[in-house]
Length: 156
Image 1 (tube, rainbow, N blue to C red):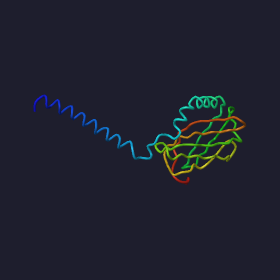
Image 2: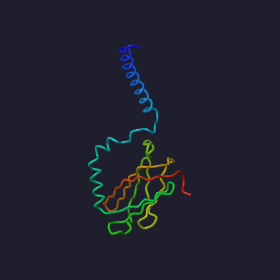
Image 3: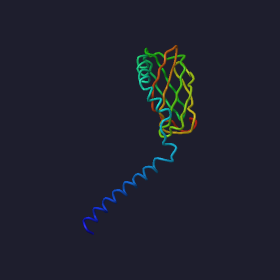
Image 4: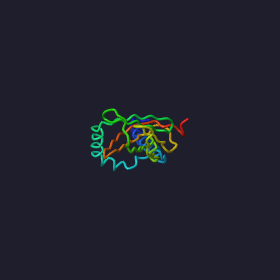
């Protein structure tokens, strides 16, 4: 094989390899429903400044929350700035399983004891979930994002 033929074969081989890589990437990117873009992603990006202002307001409010999970049972313990249990709040949780943005979950937590709110997260998808917890009381609003790991089915 002459040097000229080798160079032509090298260039053609590189072009064929590039086409093959593109075909493989297109095939891998399509078809799977769990590889979707986050719902309302554009709206969330546009509202980024508002979300950062809300996070700053929540931090100034001084409320703190501890999340405990047992299977799909979510428990949130809320305290105010002084460490006293936060009573009388309306608490909601919205989330998305990681890798399955087309299966959002939402639950309203109910007061179990002073400062403790509980609820069962619907759905069957186990694993890591990105959740937004919102607690409101007397015109004050506390928002925090957390990553929680949910199990399958009812707690034992």
